[in-house]
Length: 577
View 1 (spheres, rainbow, N blue to C red):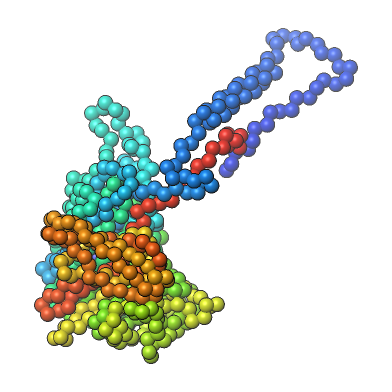
View 2: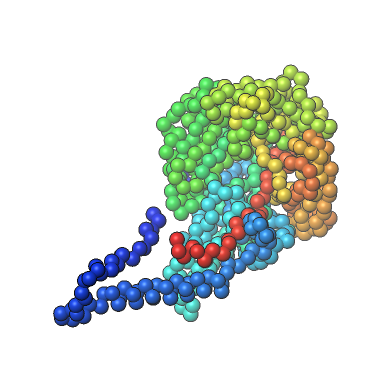
């Protein structure tokens, strides 16, 4: 596989209230005389203006009373926000590993919904070029979760061609003609290969209407070359202005690079901040990186780290615009995978997804504040939380990275890992990552990276699953919980299947994925929290290849298929303010 390099691919004030002037009465004994010349009509004009304003005001108030704002469908008497399904979802996938030694597949899926949304489309397009025509209304900010953008755009752009003209307004809800993959209906995944070649660009994914709630895209790569050998997978994420990663390295055989994809119609300016065991690694070359509109860049971390650094944390800060960011790690013949972006810094971090046969684990923690962090290390086993012998805690200096080898920490049981303050009165936000290795009987191995994750919430989905290859790791971080797992129809056919799973308080359960009857192709897994929790989870996809136990692990994340819509109350007095 071609060694990643630093490369660039071109793509495509409140108003003052009005007060009438004061009219002073004539003085006592003063005689009023008729004017000489044309009569003065200014007093009459002022009176007429005030009368006209009063008539208009009355009309406005009357209209406001006669046409009150429409009530949301689920409004309550207290005026609490109502819940609505999102009508547009967007995500960005990084540049694929696709060439003579790698094969990358993209899979898109939307779970069946219960809302009233109809129509719409879902598609994936190369180079992450703006998915809507430049003249159409802009999309919702990607600083919100991928699915957190309710539709509010007008049916046509400003200045669109009037009805009856020869040129109709562009349809921002239709898939572009050059879409490489389209999703036609909820409940059935669509899958296809990524663009071929080592210079393949990133991918933009968009879904609208009934296909937007829960829209998920998964990218999976198999690399068979000895250098970079392994299975790499990730769930594509929305563009944003800040990304946190922990677990990167530039030591030994590590080849780690950052993929930056700009799906917007304007350039983005990005800073890449690297932190090691001595704090920030200052390098001017890491600042002010310009990513052109509709283009991708790969940045090799070794060109920024000023020498070999065993354990790195990476903070991607977008100064202008928005990008999608993903970090790939390859450790020679020892394995490779994407390092997922972490949840935002927090005093407690939970990392789900440790398989029972973990042969090695290395924990990397970064304290991005001005205070040291002292953290407890706990594992969630089948019966609840416990402390691993010999690895009870970790101390992280302010602004620095600390790491510890945990060895075969799971001891043949699936687990989740939790970091929490040793002293509840001294809670310091941290970012955490965990490298896990699995080794086969022949000594060959593969690696995957876990990261701090948020609870599943109402629903989470992972799109690319294969027959006999997927396992779910579910952890209840609080009370005992019940979750429902649904396997979709296959991309080429099959009947969905459902399984209910009970989780003990603080416990972790491994669930072989249910599979659709008559499966043909790949399928999606959807996990819904029915009671208890909170629940965190991850999906492991295991595809042995050439005696290598290839695997990849993706955290399950709330798909944010609904948003809270604030209530609008009638207030005629607004016209007087």
